[in-house]
Length: 198
Image 1: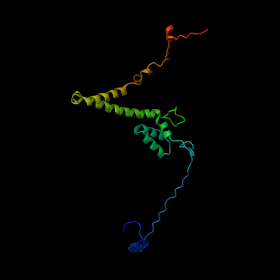
Image 2 (image 1 turned 180 degrees about the vertical axis):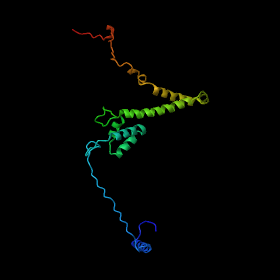
Image 3 (image 1 turned 90 degrees about the horizontal axis):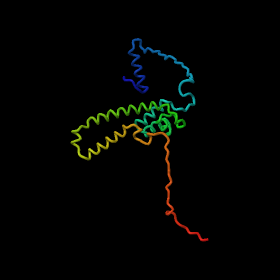
Image 4 (image 1 turned 45 degrees about the vertical axis):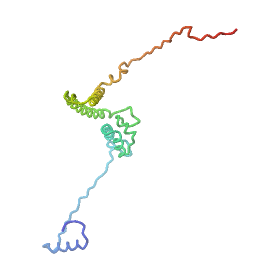
């Protein structure tokens, strides 16, 4: 008979048939006593968050920051909501800070820069492959509208690849800037004449 939940009458009928078929006339009882496991829970003050601590683990901060970089802010906010964290915390974790109160201190920024660097590296490899496949033959076979689109896309690539200093030429000279205003001299004829009566 297959195992499962059976009624009492089925159980006792199978038990009686087992007793009859056994050579001693009965079922030999099997005494299996599970061992008693006793343990002790010890509070360790040096590991984990500790009792009453509400600080978010740093590994979770890094994961939320990565999620914001890889899949966008909305995905990071959804992840943070599942842990009961606020969107303002997501903003802090995205820049490498550990909280909104210490937004200037960014201990996780190197980790996030590494993630951005990996993404940028993959994107640059794909860009190189795409540019490599733009050949003279393909350019000659395209119409003017498509050529204009390609030129626009390539100019965007060039702007993206330029260093920050060349993008904003006003930041080239970081020294003080002096502006001199010289007043214009006006001739006497340009003033109105007012006659005084005495």
